[in-house]
Amino acid sequence: MNIGIIGAGNVGKILGEGFVKSGHRVVISSREPHNLKHVSWKQEVGESGDITSFEEAARFGEIIIVALPWSCLKDVLTSINPVYLTNKTVIDVSNAIHFDNGPRLLLPDTSAGVTVQKLLPESHVVKTLNTISDKIMIHPNFKEGSPIMFMCGNDNSSKDQVRALLNDIGWTTLVDLGDIRQSILQESIMIACVISEIQLQSPGSAFALLKH
Ligand SMILES: NC(=O)c1ccc[n+]([C@@H]2O[C@H](COP(=O)([O-])OP(=O)(O)OC[C@H]3O[C@@H](n4cnc5c(N)ncnc54)[C@H](OP(=O)(O)O)[C@@H]3O)[C@@H](O)[C@H]2O)c1
Image 1 (tube, rainbow, N blue to C red):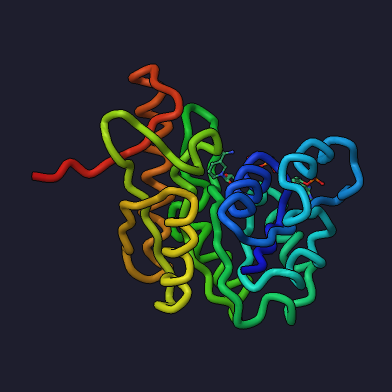
Image 2: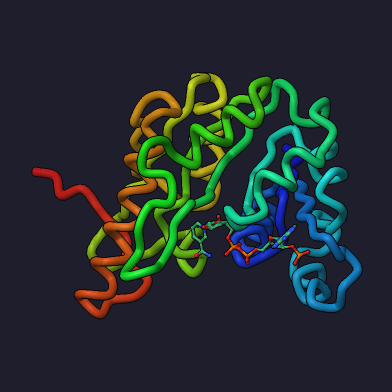
């Protein structure tokens, strides 16, 4: 598929690389697509990956991934012609958090996922991958077993698409939590994971479900 990634930071680049290596065509995006900081990514992914503007990535993608800090997400999304996002699956990996006195949800009465869906009412937003560090976002291999990845969203076909994409980058234990309002669970789990990592001095951790 053609995947358009809005963002070219840590998450945009690692997901871009993961999806190119699993056979997709990927465009990541930046305010400065020609900046030298992107050269090594382009060399790594070769002909199946490119870097452009935010709007061009949205136009290119059959599926869109929003990989932006919360502080600029709304401004960037509203700067893109909505026609390029209409009726598309939009994967939201964002976390709206602040770190004063430890990590806390910035939107405790709603969630980033619900807010993104409201910003893009004609798109099918699926929340996933927000609970995991970019270092282990693709092909997460742990000797103890397979970590769990949650998703939620309002549109079942979009969730099927996302399930297939997650499988492509090595996620095999997937749980659909329900509609996009369940984003708050995933965003809370992300905070619980960060606190667990700090207390247990175990960076790069992931949650798993222990099964009988
Ligand atoms: N990093 C992780 O381990 C991780 C894991 C799970 C979820 N997340 C979530 O994923 C999202 C992206 O995280 P990230 O670590 O990839 O962020 P990042 O590395 O800081 O990504 C920055 C991207 O956002 C763009 N950007 C930054 N400020 C901007 C502004 N004022 N206006 C327009 N664009 C701006 C940058 O554009 P330029 O290229 O032009 O600078 C760049 O493409 C966040 O919501 C984060 O909470 C992160």
